[in-house]
Amino acid sequence: MVPSGAAAGVAVNRRCTTMAMSTSPQFVVKVSKYCNLRCDYCYEFPYLSDKARMGLEQIRAAFQNIKASINELAIESADFIWHGGEPFLVPLEFYQQVNLIQNDIFGTEFKYRNSVQTNLTVLTDRHIEFLKTGFFKDIGVSFDVYGDQRVDIKGRSRTETVRTNIRKLINDRIDFRAIAVLARDTLPNIKQIYRFFDSLHIEHRILAYYRSIGSEQAQRHGLNFDELVDAHKDVFHEWLASERATPVEPIKDYVRYAVQHITSVDNDRYDRSTSERVFIIDVNGDVFNVVESYEPEFRYGNLFYSPFREIAESEARIRSVALSQERMQRFCHQCPYFGNCPGVFVANATSVERKILEVSGCRVRAVLDHIVDVFQRTDLKDYILESYNADDGAFANMHPALSVA
Image 1: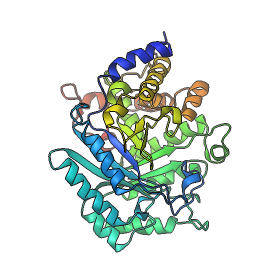
Image 2: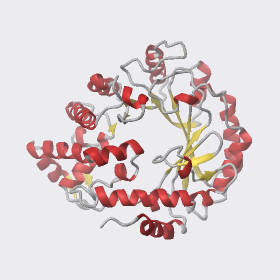
Image 3: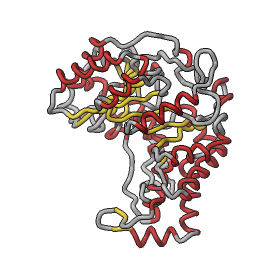
């Protein structure tokens, strides 16, 4: 039986008043929306010419409001993901000052990391030297490899620039990962995209772009349910056939769910009320989740002015979590994979993904059906069962194509 919104809200309220959340939150810091590219599918497209930027004193206030809540929220560590726009358009001296502020506020006892998501069109020698200092522990590169969406303000493709800069990072032994958008323009080349990153042994993520009614942008670039499912199947087979088997999300997770299904591991269930981890900090300090990003009614609060504890307890968060729980009741609790698959996709489904769930069902379940079937029809199922160690859930002497599990 699906709980009513009010009932679910009460249940979530009890948990949220105890300030339950992940002990290692990730803060996606929208330092500025300003960007030198004009990718037509970008969800920040209307704001890419806005040069407004967070000030250092505002960032200091945000750090202080996080620190003030560390003990109450039982936070053990934090990740700060510097995002945009294009964060490499921000002077490097800015990040040097951020480093000083973090050292001043958090000291050495609290664990924190900085990461960055960049389009990698800006990479000077100074950037290379700064990256070598290790301020950014993780670097994410947004690069589709194929297609013509990543263009600059004058409409010129920057693909070759990014290819050149990727080679620079590799030559300078600077580790990084990548994100490629799976949209109308890249769909025909999805296999080649995996092969490109696999040839360089670059872990990456395929980010699905859904088609939706009422949005011209999504109509131009979005894919329907069957197209997305088939594309993920294609990536799975490319990964399975590869000698390197370079990990690629979300296939890495899907394979893990399939292995857990075959080995009867069914205790993996996601609960946003205790495990919510990602918080988006907009340029003005407003905090949102990844489910209803930028929707005013789901604004959690403002980290420039409020302790993070108040944001974690916000009524908007309570309502959002309640809606996630209702979705999981409807779509996950009767699914044969629930417990093998934690249900994160359903819990964190965006407005477009929720419409797809209603009309076509769960993309993850459709892909899992295929992966499990492949395992069943080949000798991989027996191999998985023979290799599975029931004591620690690990695999001994795994084939590279299953090592990501």
